[in-house]
Length: 495
Ligand SMILES: [Zn+2]
Image 1 (cartoon, protein in one colour):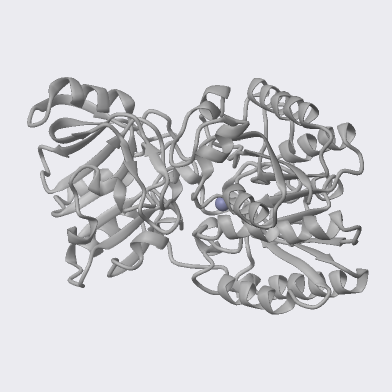
Image 2 (cartoon, protein in one colour; image 1 turned 135 degrees about the vertical axis):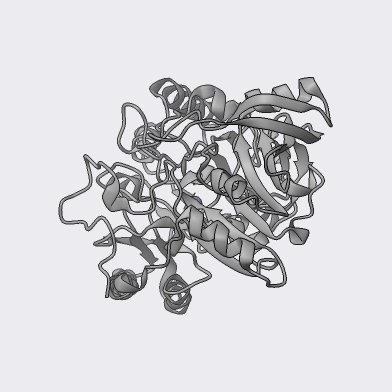
């Protein structure tokens, strides 16, 4: 049995978002654990839908000895600060040095980390690790949104990506890394192939529950057989300003021919699917009007995709809120408005009180977005600590800091869930924490691009993807890239 070092460093970087990921952001928990070292990694990830948790369970089942190093994640945002990256990388590498000798290394990585001083955070981290332990078998789990770079491929033996968006298969992905590592430990070989796509895919249309992604991942599963040990399709994170930005296919085979064949076939299918990555975007005014008049069973979900904190959004823009209030929507709830000052004011005032002239949200732009000022009734208060129940975050202890349910006095049918920390509105437990049963509402405005679908599609009568102001621009062609290769199209060509 082998002695395997394990760890992880996770950040999805929106190069164009305003809030940086400082070291403090990695220290705190949200729906995922805080920065953890040594045995705390095992305690903090047990049973969670996290890649490392799946790897740990699979490796223990096979009798391997695990040496936990460092695991850290920060909510998607603007670039990771140089200070944060250098401290975290130094800690991880020092922990690995202390753990030596080990037979192999497993890491949870995202694959779309950009720092203040580095274009390719993961590539640099892996290069430093390889310099310390040349020849050590290294296998990593990647997010489906990874922008896979040449350095990441060169400095690892295998990279294995999630296959679902919403990401419900994180633990499974970690478990799928173990047989690859065991192949290497037994002296077997894995030949890697990597093909980059020609075009960027907007986030809302990357969803694997709808076409064309559903068919691409079905093909992936078909092709992963025989001498093809692992096949991955990364959709890419289109808001990272890097030369590796975009989708790509990764294959690892027991033979060169098997890897090349599977990789080429899946990359060809990705190229052919280009025109099908499209969908309808609703302006906030029309979306709220339609939702108000809709009479289906279950709420209409308005996906505020451009303020998705899971894509680096500030989770405090007011485009949909303004329309909900202006149109005096009834039985409408909006989640999550990240505004620690407003949450603190609500807690200070107490339940049932009115906050006169409170300015809510709108503190981080983009241009034209202002705080929404009116009188607000404090309907409910919460400490922000609860257990997630949906398919993606299930079992995770969430900590969003003080929370409040506010309703604007001019439109009391609108309920705004205010939190101190950002989290994508992808779990019904967020609403229940403040006494709202989401299935009983008529309108749910969710700051999320796709992840909300895992827990909310089953209760939604209709889903409208809304284009309101925010930092997670749906159309990558509107982003001021400086590093995107000129031959890569910034969006899919339409049919
Ligand atoms: Zn992702």
